[in-house]
Length: 493
Image (cartoon, rainbow, N blue to C red):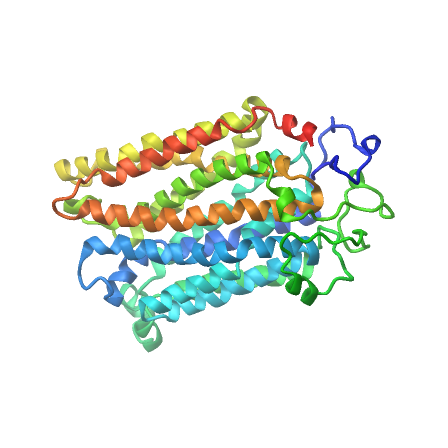
């Protein structure tokens, strides 16, 4: 949790000293947050293996293979476009009404959008499904804010070492569900061959299984999750909507209630708590530095993730590897397991040894060899077919992605350190996530479009790789703005 800040309303003598002993993790709530990390990755992982084939099936490309990546990028960016327009407001709203109701809303949106996606027969229907999910799904931001609420500087790295457990499950099971259960009537005629529903909607089964899993998580959250912030209980939701919660700071003191998790180090129950700051007061140099670093890293990561399955599915003669959905799903699932195990076993130790900035710079720098392996794998496939050399390139590329994954827990630490006060943590996180969401709109759509452009005859086949390498260098440059020691920012607050 963020230490009480030194602002206009906090006397200097009340500033707590830096903690020296590591605080135990609050497992009674932490296990639920681990569970809540799963839905986003489970749902998106379910869709990833069959999206290229689905785009071919609905006929929006009219048989032009070079356009598959373009429409896949539009589909992914539609989610982030809606996400961008709403994430800040959800985050700021959570500072006033609490994290719990916002998280429950997000889980409901995922369930509805997954059923809608499986029942869609047009590209417009697919886009609308992803827009609904993006507009009402701030769960990733809320879970991050809630994790910052219930941890402090001493146990947050340890908490993030456990995050790979649900991510590993979500990123492994999701692609397996999507890759193995898409078009079940064709792939398993003895079991599903008589189902007219699954013949009409060949991608409904994997979407339904994913939606049902998220429904169970919703129920567990509703029953067991406690609120982690003190809310302005006397302020109605309608008052917040009317004021727009833009640049507004509420004068009512924030009093913790008995059903809210309160850390003893943050003040006694009868003590007046800090209140959310207006938007303009949150735009500090520290917040802007973190935003720039997270944005460039997110631009690369989302662009790479959108191109990777399309590259696997694209014919070898056009620049890809000609892999089918089951193989793509297996590759993504296995890589998810590897990344999760590595972070689980080594992240906390690496953080203690090298610090967040060194890990982050190493992660974004790994993007350069990751990109170079794309054309190398295709060149080997053209020359020798899909053999040992190609699989070696694929394995090395997915292994390098591990260091890129480690950038995310580092960013959470930087956001926490940059927040002006604890009461504005959700809003600070929302500011960062808005800009990151913009990058996630630009990243998939631009990367997929550049990839499709590079496949067309007469165009430079290396255009997509120049694009990615330029972003990787930009990400390294912005990472230099981050402090080597997080206590530098925390002590200056």
